[in-house]
Length: 397
Image (cartoon, rainbow, N blue to C red; front, side, top):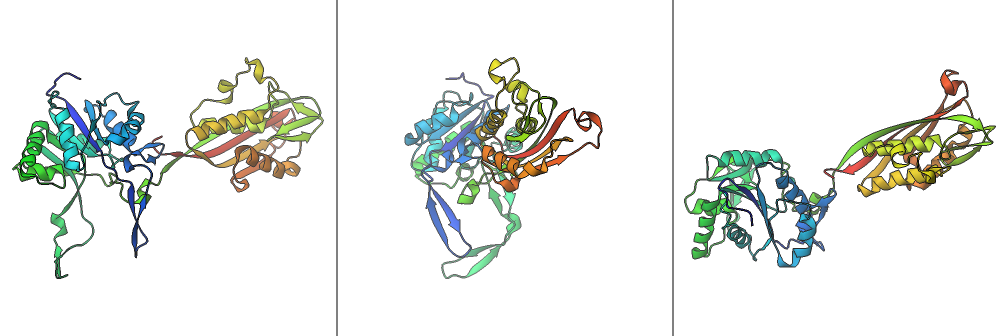
């Protein structure tokens, strides 16, 4: 157990819920769908929801430790989610109510006696560094801090007789987590709550009930709590890579371009089969991933690459994309040469690329151009190719 420190700021993550259900609505009716996993262990943008939460606090320089409260049935799921996190303390088991789970987490930290505690819901994966910092700054002068957002819709209070009144929304706020507290203040409030056996909606309501003033800081619109199934829809960032390659002609009877054998009075010289188009495309995919280039992964010093089929290189690059849970959006490939003529083989090239990469043909463009007799391609000394590709990568992966 880490040593006692009055300057420690600890994040307490409430992840003991069994929230398998998501609300769904078509605007007229609502229903619930049931998932096999609790919300906090659902996949989201390349990680589980809980991993996003842990990563946010792990990366904040002023958070010293992370205490997670879990359900006893989730030990294996939690172990996987936290395995790369250095700030995580051993988890503790929560109770049937959120309030009980927070209390158990606070009890586990008694020996450490931290200065401040930030209580956060595991179902809020979009917590930002700036929001954590705002709460910690406010905690320096106040024992209880909550992030809030304004209401934008009209709010009505309905009575039992179905009559209603409009509430002044400028005085109403939406409250988020993490909520920050002086540790001793929050622990005392939870211990006092045990004597009255009352359940509060959140920790700020609890300390407020026992006389502690709660101050607010600006919340974050992105810091939503996962409630509806669409909240788990992955968001993507798009990356672009470019590649260029050139090979000279030598004696031979064919040229390999895009995996297609084209009869010709010369061939391209290279360590592999010299498919200049596939080499350029391979480099473009690696560039989009910031994963080096073809020479780094398949060096000429490696004898196994001698006369190798360049489709192997492209498949390798495509696998790198897949391993990142990304997908190729489109390919734009230009072959630069005086000969051979590309147009009779262009459709075969598109078909071959589609087969290699398992993607639709309408996302693959193969073009050809000349350099108007200029340069080495203009003098028919060789063939060049340039490729541009875009990939969609799960945000935050």
